[in-house]
Image 1: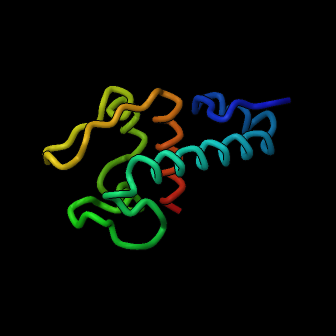
Image 2: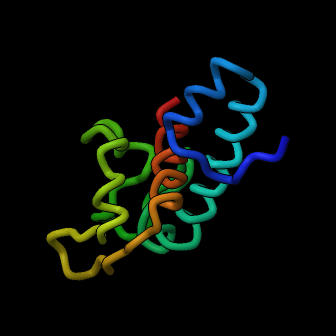
Length: 111
């Protein structure tokens, strides 16, 4: 059985019940894809890993975002175009699978 690199959260939950090993593999792939997206698109300003300071002082480290708000609520903003109140952050738009992967990565940093 071959799994897609990203799966909707409901599908992951169902897989976890039916076959925990496949669900864990799918989650790991999704987290890895999210990490790649973060390093490619966000690391020039944000600390995207488990340690280190953000290159841009005002950009919060990704590992702290979950303390500010539920990161799972970012899905719509990431897909529609995330914007902030400061002009130095470019607008980012991710397709729904990419948004889910980035959120999975952010959630993995909560541990």
